Image 1: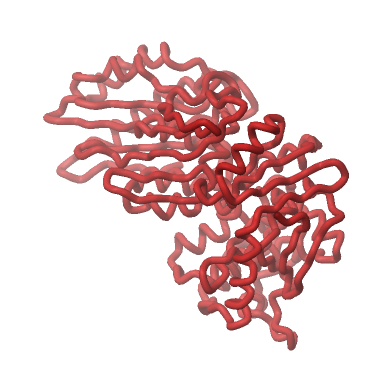
Image 2: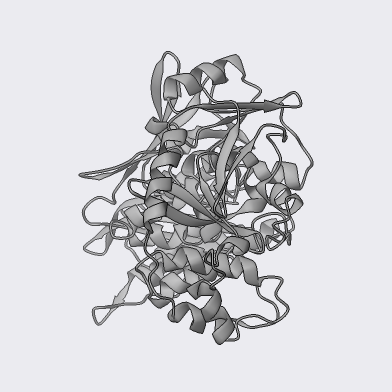
Amino acid sequence: MRNTITTHINGRDITLSDVPPDRMALDWMRAEGLTSVKEGCGEGDCGACTIALGIPAGDHLEWRAVASCLLFLPMLDGRAVLSAEGLASPAGTPHPVQQAMAERSGTQCGFCSPGITMSLFALSRRTERDEESVLDALAGNLCRCTGYRPILEAAGTLPLSVPTESETALAGRLAGLSATPLFYSYGGRSYYAPTDLAEALAYRAAHPEAWVIAGGTDMGLAITKRDQHPDSVLSLARVGELTRLTRHAGGLTIGAAVPYTDILAAVRDRNPALARLLRRVGATQIRNQGTFGGNLGTASPIGDSLPALIALGATIDLVAPDGVRSVAAETFVTGYRQTRLAPDELVGAVHLPDPPPGARFYAYKIAKRQDQDISTLSASFLISVENGMVTGFTAAFGGAADRPIRARSLEKALMGRPWTLDSIREAGAALADDISPRSDVRGSARYRTELASGLLARLWHETRTAGGIPATLDMV
């Protein structure tokens, strides 16, 4: 077990032993003179702090854009890091991404430009160059003065970057470090990153007060926005059993520490509606860090994943030192920020079924912005209609109560009924028995109630056909 943070930043090996483990990577990098990494919002929303994180993947590094303002410094251990200072060649030749930004006039004031450049660098390592991929890569980067046209033009000219021989050697060396548990402590605080589930569970049982993180996108906010500082942190990001995503007939088994980016890739063809929903979970930087396990563990009433998991009939494995128990997704959250997790348990995996034959899944997220925003209300539906009659219907809502809920009264009111707008309107009264929304800064209780009814009507419009042509609306 190692007790120092070892990373590779902009071409140099770095070893750290005298920095608090709950310090954010952004703060440390700026203090070390890497001032291209900017602090804007401090919550992973603006992209000014974007860096590229190189994760060992066989004979190469998989480079992913991440928000350094939410990255605990020990998360750099066993990883390569690039900031804008490290993009040019040793001889000083600009990287093709930098060249493209300059030639296309992609920068004015320059505050956002380093983060945008790092997002484009991560894009340059992927073969995708369609409009959706480019927009996804830049959705988490805010630019107030240049405008996105020249930046999008720069993205369109990027050549594909390929690993160098030195990167291959570095990937092997970092992979060896990543395979070794890290127990780092300084100033009375500790950070433990095991690689084995049994080790993680033993630590969890011995330290129930420890913050449990995978990507840290929520717990990082507790530090940057609420000035909370944990005595101990348990990171699940490298626990092998929790980082596996298994495809099988009928669905997926998704480890609690699998990033949203990998989940999105896995469901894109199997469940396009779910993929569209997951694409609106933060932006690329957040999806590269955030996980199902973290989203479930926070038990937020407006968490994006749980309504969809409820509607699809997912189950969740809760693991403890003495075994595993499986619970239905709809029963996992028991109250406001409360779950069925025992003090010695961790979320192990989500078993996500594909929609059954003949059923269709729809998911909606209502927020003030299309990208990078928190839900005001969300709804997920799984529906089967045969000969004009509802033969199967499951509905779940987020933001409509103190927890994500399943709307059983609504389901009962629609089952066996004709799938018509009149049936939808009549079932609206039953929906009032299911939901009890609260008023907050994102919307009033009345607004959320009307939204829930409106999404039900929207579902009908999107499932009906006129002349054999589906009436599909844009998701906004």
